[in-house]
View 1: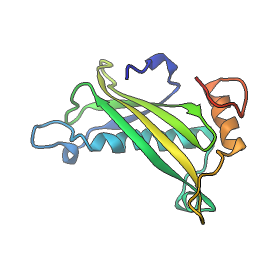
View 2: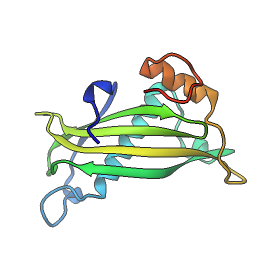
View 3: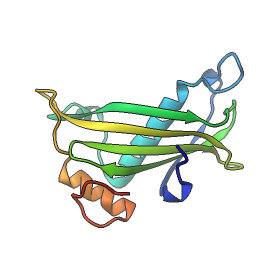
View 4: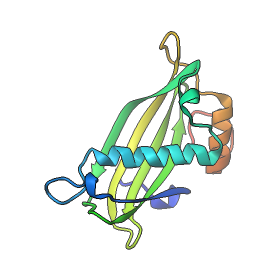
Length: 153
């Protein structure tokens, strides 16, 4: 993927816990999905999106349509990790999160992530246009012009 660290404004710290380690003594590959999710939720809350069980189950919902991870180096028990998160583009009914995990001590690259999220109608399950207010919040935070264009790159 080769994501540019300089493009990320948001970060979240996570410390690797003992139960996240596999039989090889490194963080299990599936745990990185959780780390990136922690970063995404923290990002949304930081820009002013309310994330609760109620908001996730209203008239519309957000689902993950794609989740890609490139593993670069292993994390181990006790490592403090920095999860960098951004929304890189907003399309008609979807938006794209990008994430980078690195060690906070020496900035060693651990993993990179791209995930595509789709807004669906809660009743029909059909795709809905990403809300204008969400577009404005992201555009303001990411420092880009326009609030309804197809992308933020």
